[in-house]
Image 1 (tube, rainbow, N blue to C red):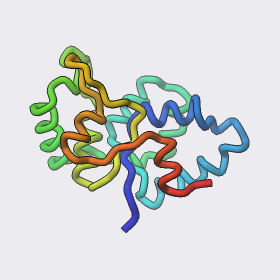
Image 2 (image 1 turned 180 degrees about the vertical axis):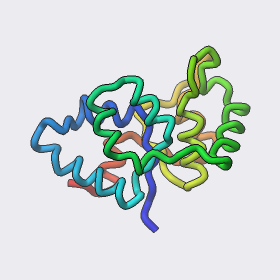
Image 3 (image 1 turned 30 degrees about the vertical axis):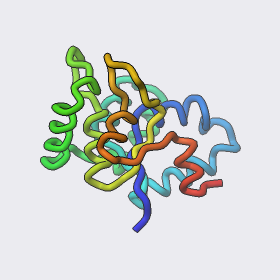
Image 4 (image 1 turned 90 degrees about the horizontal axis):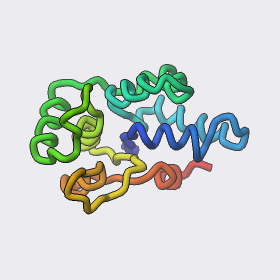
Length: 156
């Protein structure tokens, strides 16, 4: 069975807008490989990541609309796991946010699928806010940055 990567909003945005813009010809092959990995089920994400991208309504969301298969709907098992994550790691989310936040659902999905979370967030020692790597480490869920995923997969 191939490794599965569960990708966060910030990794998609930074990859397409900053590090590997598809408008640069040298990165076309990378995005072809990315989309092939989505088709093969090796790159997934949460439907809540899709909803976060939808709010931005930019090129990344336009691309995401054509990759709907990667965005996994929140089912009962994901919702239950995400609820437990929120209860145990309250500082992962902003309680005043006006919409559901993707992070606990992304981690829950990765945990249930035994996937590696891909995020640009960094581990923090802040007592005010937790980041995805903090929770992944506590739950023994692997995580890495987008450039590490590209190396891990072996794209060229």
